[in-house]
Image (cartoon, rainbow, N blue to C red):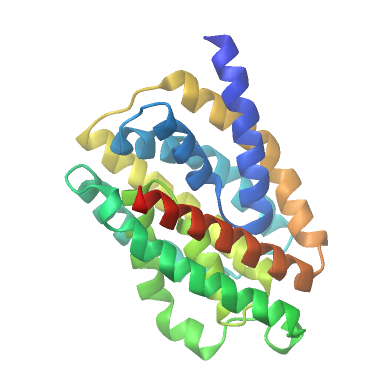
Length: 253
């Protein structure tokens, strides 16, 4: 048992280091790994979201202390994400996530290309270090849809929210930090919904993911603060494109 915990702790550390620094990929990485071991999608999503309650709490706090969080945006994202997440967690017990994943992957692919193009074209983030009018207007629908798809697919909150906020020309560190902080509230409600509907299993895996993720969270937040915004935008775009292409290929199999 303890050998399994150590293995999953290493996976949790790596996944959270990526998620905390780039604002995405923890849930996608962990869920893919669990499903590869034969775990049913609803149980995999429930296990990952349980672990994320702890990792996002540490990550969100670290981002807030380092000044990476827009508090007003956090409130709007968290409220909308909770509504979508609770709905998605319930639907995950009756609706296969494979139905919606191809559409999410296409959306993320488009957003990743936009972000990479802006990074290459030397878009200056200091022209808009806060949310634009488009962000303010559409942040609630973004939170609801992202929370819904995150719960159904076992991950994707960070990829959808972060990519969209950066696509709306928000400073990358604020987009990443705010998305990470809001994710704590979303994962808490998603986990509670899963517990009420199907319960939880695989505690050795959850323990390992939590341990590794909590250790990595402060380090990842520090890296977000220190990395230059333009290279960070490029990295975010690359990760989104790779994840979306992988999702599309999986949906065709």
